[in-house]
Image (tube, rainbow, N blue to C red; front, side, top):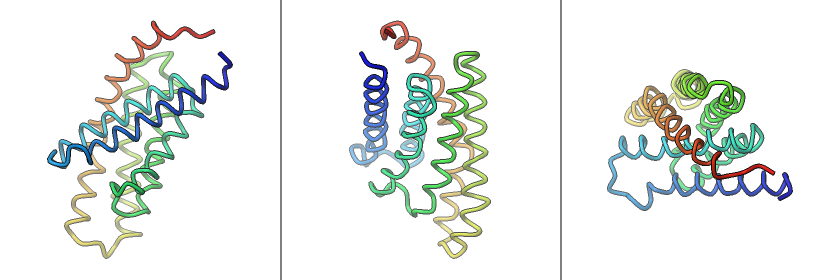
Length: 177
């Protein structure tokens, strides 16, 4: 199979999976918000890491940017300004996974998870909330402050562990030609 076709196919499949995973919130509406964030966030991070390893930085970057835009369209992101730090956090995870995974998967996952957490915390809690949403209701500010803090580290870590397991199987079954 042509390398370009393989890259497009893999990127499209992983983007579609990412959108399906984001949409779980619609299909399982009774899921509590904190459980939803852990489940959905972990699955999205799984897709980002698999994309980074299987398609390279370029495929991963497409998913990293498109996924938060689709989440905004789906109504899962409460305000458009959040798309930028979410995309940046995703980009950091993808770049770390793409650059480090083949050398040391654990280092790639830990570094990516920590840097994504830092990026999202600084981007949302320290920049977006005080400068772009200073008059947001206190309840919204509190919810966003929690959502974009430690749970991001947890979901990136869980997604990374799942990705290592899946990539082990994928690499054995998918032969590059």
